[in-house]
Image (tube, rainbow, N blue to C red; front, side):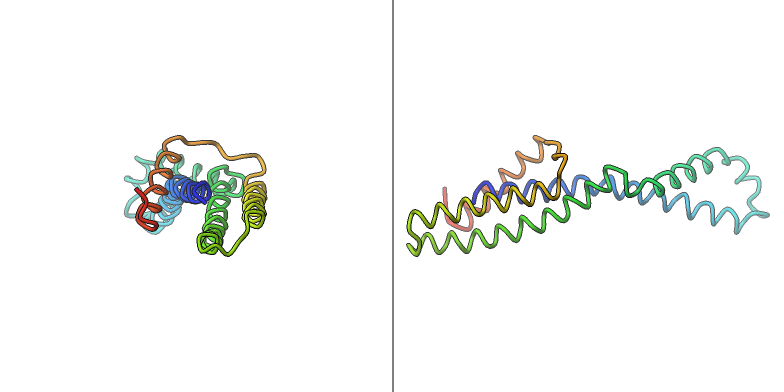
Length: 162
């Protein structure tokens, strides 16, 4: 259960970290799109300003169009989508695991049943990861360490562990 909690925290932190890059790409697209529209609206009045910064607008518009054309292939966008979905799956799995753990702690399962439940959970986690990240997920030590600290704080506060 601890490992699942760490994995759930890690993937959520990973998703948030990747989300920063997705937002940056979105902002770039918005600036380029709105800049080109605004440029056309003030074409006559702002010709000198537009002409002076034409190379900058050309780069922004080109980058925006490239980002838009590659949005489905762009690793950051694809990775963000996968981490978002996987975060929800692991969160749900952790809720189920916690319910199972509480049943175990009340003595409702035999050792054999506990082992079967643990293997079932491991298989579910493995299958979910294989589905979300068929090529694997790059490891980020900084996020993993943060996930470990978060899981430790959770178990300390929830189960009064020291």
